[in-house]
Image 1 (cartoon, rainbow, N blue to C red):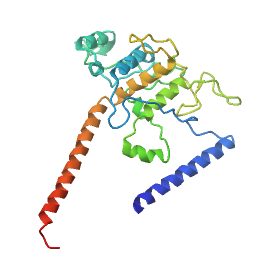
Image 2 (cartoon, rainbow, N blue to C red; image 1 turned 135 degrees about the horizontal axis):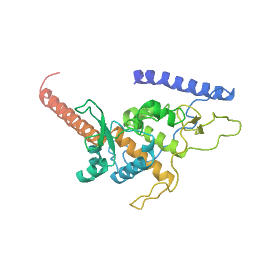
Image 3 (cartoon, helix red, strand yellow; image 1 turned 120 degrees about the vertical axis):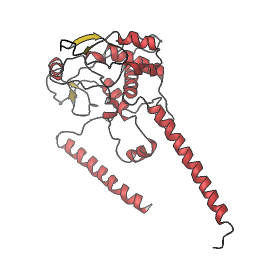
Length: 283
């Protein structure tokens, strides 16, 4: 216990000193710590040690991605065939993949060519290269969505991060994505941002970003009757991005629970065995 306290106290002091420094810096007009506002914590079906993905939500998130986000953002680590995990049949996945064209080759003449995508292919990039992506997006290259929900981890600070270690907290990325999509607003009085950027206090790197608000109420039509609001869109696409980043999370949680259960039973059996073996021994 003493060792545990000794290891926690320094972290607490660093967090307190860091917070005090940030406040002092902001008070002096220096660059504030980003994000300016901490991501809003949301309720997710996959949270907790027994959480699971909501397939209906993932399907809606895929729809938001394909109709809005895919115009700028790639997802080149996600294969079309994995969409069967969302509840789609093999034929539906084939039909979905056929909407895309991918580059292949070289052919017998040594040239690259394009063809209709098949389930074994991956989501293609909307741009031929990074230079074209930057040119079309005010100089900023849109990040790939494959692992973004895991990469955009915003630490919750002390003491929450201590508990996060033991609870397996992994909702920081989806919380950040949701907050970013719903957090666009006009700059406060006295705050100037660069031309062509858009103020968002939830952005992790600055007060403004090159991407304008990509979606709003009524942009995407849902077939299941779910609300067609910015709040719902943000929840659905954030959940979909979490699945894209960790598609085997449910299996991991199930395996982890079985391992913990096995270790608990094994420990109990070993304790009872020790008692039985040494019960007649003189001490």
